[in-house]
Length: 273
Length: 76
Image 1 (cartoon, rainbow over the protein chains, first blue to last red):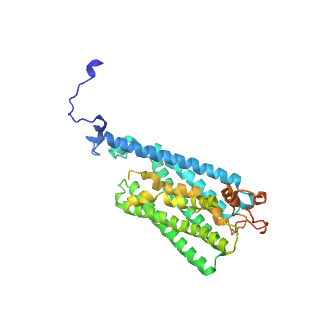
Image 2 (cartoon, helix red, strand yellow):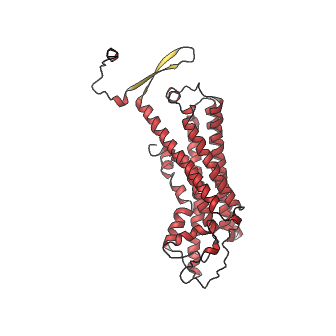
Image 3 (spheres, rainbow over the protein chains, first blue to last red):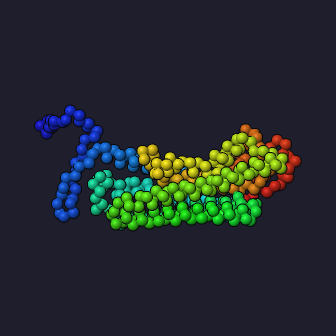
């Protein structure tokens, strides 16, 4: 075996972690050509993949756990309320979406050779079916989220005067519709291009815009919930009612006004611009 | 795009997880017994959706004069 080991001459600035990675790909005319990538490309793909895989695994577990908690701890008479049904449906569809995405990570779309050489000959109908299902579930989750949020805003506005209520509902629902519409368009074109084996660079801008509008829509809903907190504090002061404690205000602001979902994609939105 | 490029894909998951919590706050209709300055008073805010309202015995300091039977039901 010793004589198979070859000594190679390397340049003085040789970096073994960034050395070229050679592989053979078909030229689609019966011949084969040599293609060169870098180990760094492979490493970037690995890091992205693992991050996405871990995140979707965590998303699946968290959604499923919260669904369990919601089902077990909600009182029996509230299990028929629309908000409960919508929230449970959201969590269920989102956990299915996350699980499907995990199968995408382990599927043929993500085969290292396919990704590095951009040759998609091994893709089967099942792969495309699961890809389309992921996209449909994404749209479904978005629709359920915006419906649930609109219903919650309606509940918040039950005691407000009709004019204010109509204005708030019109603004929030139209914002939700715009966000949802852009999302559907982006998903439609992305799927169409993927099915045609084309890159989705041409709709990159549409995709970014749809993400931004989605986040803006969530901000609008968050503003309504936060405004309700401010209004409750002011009203309690005016009517001399017991005030919210500082812990309660922090709790409501942090967890119950959609502030975290609005803030967490902020860094990415800034980068996309 | 080095900082968590996949975080955009997580907006949906995070919103889904926070939906039940915001539904609780949305369902609070001017409840007088809710406000409290106790150390664990924030846990009362979980009660409108999850717990039995009749088990709630901790009232805020000085609020006992208010109507104890105030409904905690969500309006939908």
